[in-house]
Amino acid sequence: MGIKDVSKEEDNVIKGATQLIGPGVQRDLQTEVVVSFIMNVILYPLVLLYFMVTFYYVTTKITPHEFIDEKFHVAQTLNYVAGNWTSWDPKITTPPGLYILGWFSYRLGRLFTSWTSLTLLRMVNLLGGTIILPFTVLRPLFLFNAIGFWPVALMCFPLMAAFYYLYYTDVWSTILILQSLTCVLTLPFGINGSIWVSSLCAGLSCLFRQTNIIWTGFIMVVAVERRAIIQKQYNAHRFNNYLKLLIHSVDDFSTIVLPYAINFTMFVIYLIWNKSITLGDKSNHSAGFHLAQLFYCYLFIAFFSAPLWFSSSFLRLYRNRLFHSPVQYVVELLGIMLVIRYFTKVHPFILADNRHFTFYLFKRFIGNPSKMVKYIFMAPVYHFSTYVYFETLRPSEMAFESMEPVPFKDPIDLPIQLSHISWTALVICTFVTIVPSPLFEPRYYILPFLFWRLFLTCNAEPLIGEVKPAAPGEPPVLVSSTQRLALEFIWFMLINLFTFYIFKTRPIVWKTESFLQRIIW
Image (cartoon, rainbow, N blue to C red; front, side):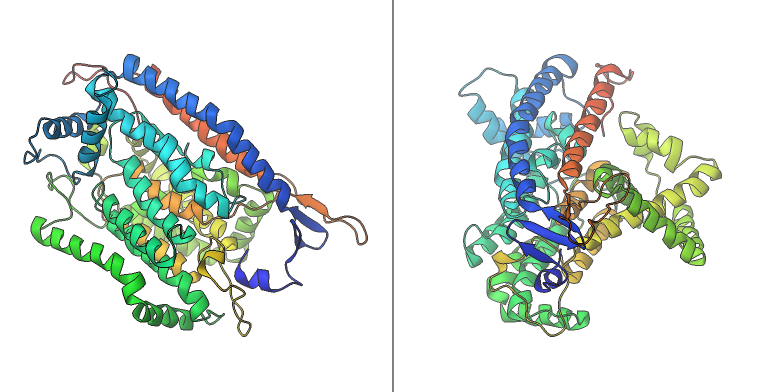
């Protein structure tokens, strides 16, 4: 639902708590909102109990020892605990944000419990993912857009939930950069104060993952845009809107751009000092042009968002596009095949480490030596995944009138949606974040998915079949997105249960390791 739709009563009539979305078809928004709140209240304690029980089981029974990269993270944190603040393991590639946070967790935890050091450090991510993320980050956005997503579902997003049990950087990197976005959209500290807090959260997130500086740029675009839309009056002339955004960023430089510019300046100083974006082990993490990585990302996003886009009508639209433009489809497939052939990076870690699902995905599908699998099968899969990425979000894009003014007076009143400008920024930031990476790492797709998902308003189409509008004079047919949001939660939890089952029941023996190894994302 865009601004253009809201301003045209004949196209989109909202009466009370219902929304007329087509002739004879109505959406009961009030019921959707009420059900969303009730379901989150009911499900959250159950989900919290699940993660607490499985965390205890993982920490005490399955892997009571350091797992894969934990040995670097734990050792570095314990160095800080011992007061060795100048000590640094050269194999660590990320800044010390996690280790400083772990130092606080360790010191505080030791006052109340005798748990092992590993458990105390792992608790950092469990508490962050199951308490801070849903309440501090997602809940304010949910209050503004209760029909858009369920916090209880997004906190269960499988790529991130897998790291609630381990001492890795991904959870708090995600929490802080999403909190930066939340401050921009909900303005909890006023118009100007919220921007500075947003900048602070974005800067802190870069202490957990350097590439968050790119997402800081995306958040800055959103912050400028949500004021420019109103003050400069966006319209249907898209190029003019880019000019208005640029002019507004200059006009309000000190209140909007400057806070983020401080982060960019500090990052440039870091690059000059370090001579690279990567700390420590630069040889195994050198940047490249891994264009196929973009298709991997779209594939994962399409997979995890299946309950949101799957419907008979969506599949029919894709089929019609192929039949109406077969030449274009063939050209696009050939382009994807060329990317697979010439812009696929095969990092040695992918082929050597069978403790990750990517090892098996790459071996059997993505990097399969059979050309039938690698090109003929995977190219259409990548094509459809790219279509899903763009077309699922498209109905949620803000649209503007040519002549009529924007019907809002304050940025906080704007819907949580992207315009064509911020959507372009999202695509660019996703590209710049993941394409330079030589590693096929699904956890790199956490932020591309969540930034995409938070701006997506779930449609109310049935999964199977079509909506039959009511006949003239009869009460309109009611549709709802509640089923899709519930299925998204169920889908995530099923994936979590499956990955936990594999983690528990499929141990791997490594001769170089003292303990049984496990499979994770």
